[in-house]
Length: 237
Ligand code: ADP
Ligand code: MG
Image: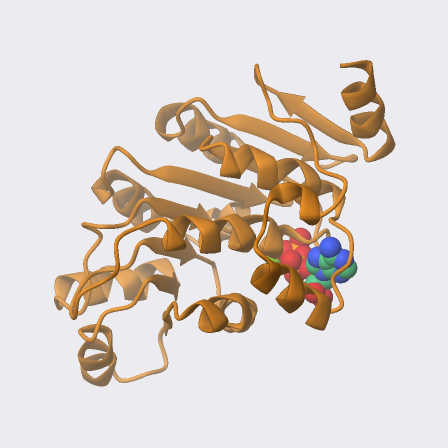
């Protein structure tokens, strides 16, 4: 316990919740397969960043997570690594099935970045990732989505469009990531984000990441996250 306190102090990790799993000091400690560890090695990722060292064990334990850490602190892998494990634990998809996991982001550019990172980890595990953002013809996107996938990276508006067009559905989604939730709200996607959160089955895990805190986000966390762990790294505005 003193040991855990010391690690959290050194890494400037603050948690507010009971029974939070202790931070990991290495990726090996997370129980990842050698396939995952080898992919990380190829990506030149050696040691977890503070947000990764606390968020990964919390997510793997099944808890919802509200993570606040500044830009560049490694939030993507903090949710993508447990996402891969979560998807591998679920039954195989059939043609036309909706995703097991959805990652919502505020912009097309970020969607593409997150898509690339996720694909690096997903592809060697035979998990299919699809990107759903504007700028692509809706009809062709619908056709492509109907083939099914395990993971979707999307901007909120276009995901809602594709659900309406029956390109995909949220029936199997049990792992929802709201990345840069603060920006999504700033960009006016609050009601779209809320409608997706509310459409998802109750036995889901929600992982919400921000660089800053704000009232509307705190409200979402309070109302929609269950038994969650709030993790703050360093000083955040
Ligand atoms: P954030 O989402 O918090 O802004 P990112 O997930 O985009 O941060 O990561 C920022 C950069 O840090 C990326 O280039 C990423 O490859 C790198 N990175 C992530 N995790 C690690 C790690 N454990 N060790 C070294 N570099 C890392
Ligand atoms: Mg990010």
